Image 1 (cartoon, helix red, strand yellow):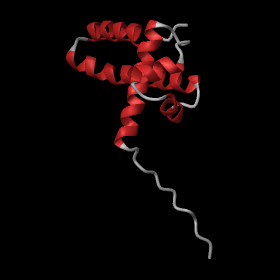
Image 2 (cartoon, one colour):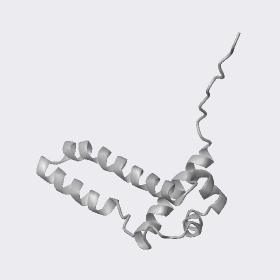
Image 3 (tube, one colour):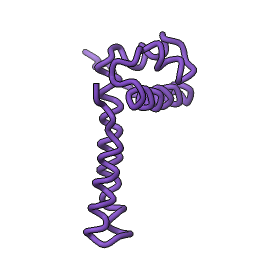
Image 4 (spheres, helix red, strand yellow):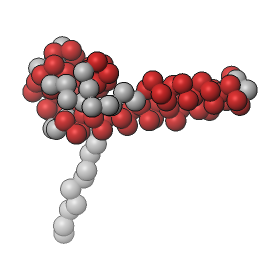
Length: 108
């Protein structure tokens, strides 16, 4: 009788989740101030974590850029219905466009 290995998905530890969020926040700030070529060491320093922690969460520069971009797009998508609930359509669109122009600072 063959047994299939049970795939268990554990919830990340609280400190791991916190470190990941710190790294994403620090990356966004670094991208805004320096550009996508900000050093990974600088990102880790800004997040107050070691470089090993950065690489544990994001094995490459592309992975951290993607994580920041993905979070920004998710926040923009979540903002649209909220803005429509609190503002008239034209005003909501204007506010959303302003958010989108300030949310994705991934220029080189």
